[in-house]
Image (spheres, rainbow, N blue to C red):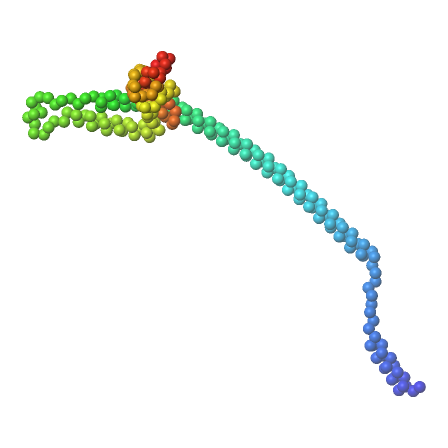
Length: 223
């Protein structure tokens, strides 16, 4: 076989070998696979421990928050009770100081009413007839009326209100019977007249009234 034929055969073999694709399979590495699984398990265990730690910390924080919240709530309730008690004590002391003053104002109010109910004095003397402008000796009555209305406003601003008992049934909790009278047109035990008015202060009795009651409705123990 001459060199030309050999060279041609070699070329054909070379082309054949170049056309074959060699597939290399990766070598099995059981040790590597085991190492990867172990790493995954280790990481999972670390994550689980971290979650447990975080959960414990969160639980401790919640317990501390509940303790602090309970303390604050208890302190707030105690403070609220103390505040209410202080307000009640202050109101009670204020009422104790103001009550005598209000009673004095009621006495003054009664005297003004009694004065205003006096009959008007007739104008006498030649001076009144001589004057072209008639004298007004009852001007003081208007002044007393203004003063009386001013007292009523002061009492109303202090939440003092009058008890209207005339025509109502006698109530020993609100009034004291100082006399009796027979009235055929009134039912037994009805208040016929108020000798002295009674007053309430913040819906509590400030001063009891003195009244005249229909005789057939009041016992001797109530007079």
